[in-house]
Length: 127
Image (cartoon, rainbow, N blue to C red; front, top):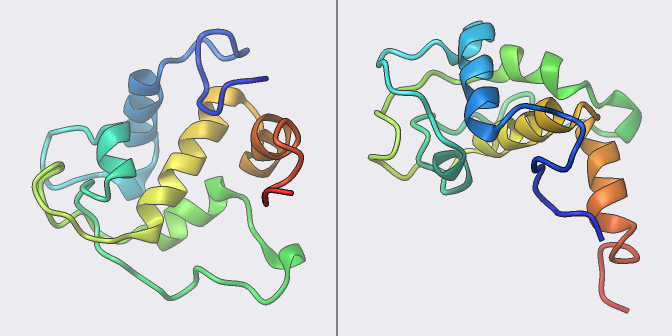
């Protein structure tokens, strides 16, 4: 079974730190008012420093979904807290984790999840 999190056995040569640095440097939406880079752990624990923004995060049908690389820059709320200091629930932080998976695996997030999570476990729900 393939690992749930990209690692050195996957095609990408990037590490999570490299990918976050690349995301921070290449996406204007990640320009922060502070110099500290966010970490994967901060994204997963909702302490990356963003706020919640509910506008634009849902679509009525799956065919209206847009790729994360297009979604993130248009929906990224500002970083208002230093990373790792304040818990603030944020769907965008989890979307950034999905984009990080895409960056590391060189696959769309949905394809990565299908191949590495859902197919090996025979779907999402226990049978």
